[in-house]
Image (tube, rainbow, N blue to C red; front, side, top):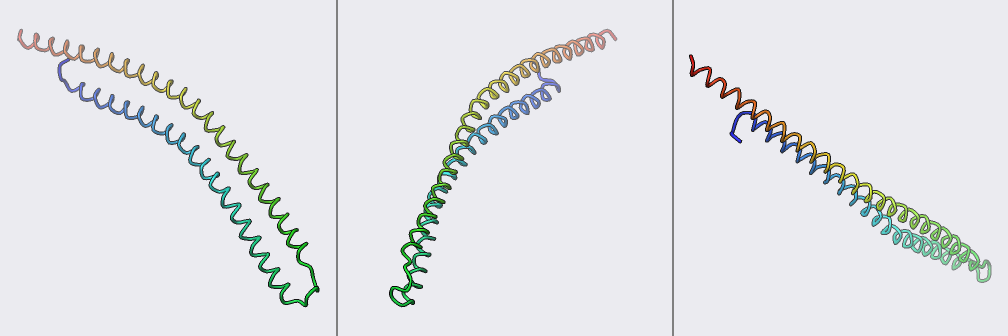
Length: 161
């Protein structure tokens, strides 16, 4: 193929098309990664929920101990109150952890579904870009041939003058 002004234009278009295809794949991969990162963040928050519950229970127990120590002996029994606090926090913590587990499972399932979608979409994108590039290459071949024919005709016309 000879070099002509059209060749540079077609090369630039082909490069832009290939970059678009690459960016599409990069976007799909970024989205796939975000599902994993989000699930990991949710899993890490489970530990925070447990630590927060233990810290708060400890603070309440310390408060009850302080109040109890300032009352006359046998004036009040805080053991039942401590048990009530423990039971309440244990129930709340369990509910929060169950909710987080459900959210993690949902995100992971969504990630799996997205992975399947992304693979299918990537195949469609690739086949579409390949078909477009094939058509683009054929168009370039035709344009270059026409340009060469016009150039040859112009040369013949100039030669006869």
